[in-house]
Amino acid sequence: MMNTNQIIYGLAAAPGIAIGSALIFDPVAAVDVAVSASHTDEVDRLNAAITEVDAAIAALEATLRDVGKVEESEIFDAHRMLLGDPGLHDRAISLIVESGMGAAHAIGVAGEEQAIELLSLDDEYLSARAVDVRDVVGQVQRRLTGAHGLVERLLFPAVVIARDLGPSDLMSVPRERLLGFALAAGGLTAHSTILARALGIPAVIGLGEEVLHIAEHTLLALDGTAGSVQIDPPAEELARLRGAQADLNARTQALRADVGLPSVTRDGTQIALVANVATPVEARVAREWGAAGVGLLRTELLFLERPDLPDEAEQMALYAAVAAELPNTPITVRTLDVGGDKHLPAFPLPHEANPFLGWRGLRIGLSRPDILLPQLRALLRAGANADIRIMLPMVSTLDELRQARALLEQARAQLTAEGLAQSAYPQLGVMIEVPAAALNADALAREADFFSIGTNDLTQYTLACDRGNAKIANLYQPLDPAVLRLIAMTCEAAHRHGRHVAVCGELGGDPAATALLIGLGVDELSCGSSNLPLVRAAIRAAHSGECADLAQRALASASAADVRALLG
Ligand code: PEP
Ligand code: MG
Image (cartoon, rainbow, N blue to C red; front, side, top):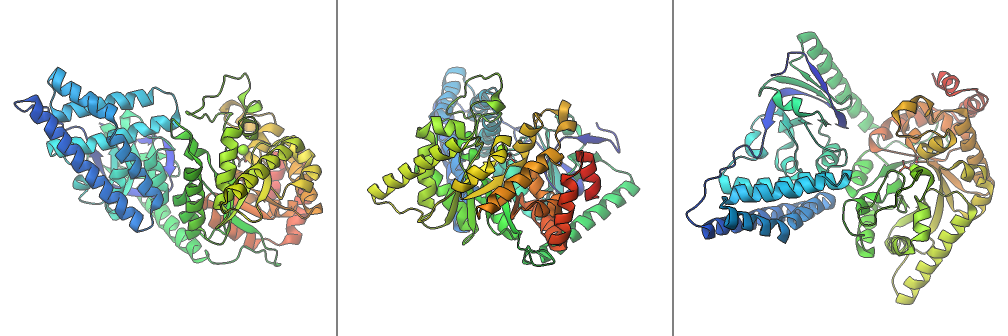
């Protein structure tokens, strides 16, 4: 058992504080291995249970679709595919027939084999799918054994502790009873994590087996921002946490009240405040937080979670679904940005000595038109009914922009020849995330329709500092004057040619940097939805004259520390 006042740390998966008693949820604990008289009976029982679960998932999927929750409904569509997988079914049948297992036991073993195979692929996205397999298999087992699912267990408001949770668990329980959840396993890109963020459920994941040893009904304080779970906190700590929780709720409410206010400085300069998203659910949350569009739609998710490449229609459906969440606003979609540390199961990348300096981003797209061309076609087609803007990642040279534009023209000509509707005036922009692009921004600005500065990579490449390497994290400073000078050069070049400049890297969502970025000449800030209210407040508190002074002083600074001191 765990000690009073012990704190365990995991990964911060979804922000917020949850205080309540622990409910330990172990969906497979009660699997009944009793076997019927004949194998045929067990096979029939299994088939009947699978049919019932499939019908239940189909009903949930249809309900979600009816209320416009397209993204969530797609998760359950994927679940039905997993459930209908002949490999899973055949393996379970052979375990019943050849090894004499009961139906619940057999489907559990077959599912676990698949889950372990997915986990062994050493791919974050496929590993996350192991949870989905366990989720559907758990539902079949519960049908067979009468064991309880989360919805039957969660009869009072509680902080749920589990090894892992599937999306169906989250969607099946009343929101007010699920105060938060703490998982021994879990992934930051797992569906349950994405849903928790979208639904505002505080969550900490990756806590390790230790968390499963917490006694049921123990009082817990879960901090989804700090990534911690405190066990039976003392009274004064509890009071502090309740105060923080109340502050957070009050702040959220107050910021919600400002959602409709324009993102304009005190002296009337308009700054476009838009969101970074990857899914329609996130786009909906962005709308709720007052985003004026999407500044960066990362398209990788659609490619990463599957063994094959998504076709044009599927890609078009994603872009249209995101645009439908934020109608009549610009939706800036980045073409596929894999390579570096992001791999596609459908097309494994070769081993490279320096992958971040290698075959990544647009470099892959240009050498694999079979991947980039369908994406451009999908973007143009989605653009027939929405303001879709196309953005190219990892551009280093003007020649790359020209090659991409030639491919875009090819896509346009194809669609015209096929008589398919498409964007009337597609905008083609360039991400500025390689120092060469910033230094050559004048030439790029003559031919690009807009710029968006990816400060995450721009910092990494300017300071020659791997953004994911904790050993050199002290070097990784987006506020380094070297990075700021590249941002200033980019803005000056863009404005000389009448182009607008966005920042879509993490710096764009840092309210402490908002005034500085405005002073450097940035026209648009794009960030995760949770940062939108604070950035909006920072824009509204700023004055463009003061911002310009601040920028001049920052550009004249000698170090990131000096710049931080200026920002206060
Ligand atoms: C960036 O590099 O700043 C950026 C927005 O792209 P990503 O973080 O996806 O590389
Ligand atoms: Mg980048």
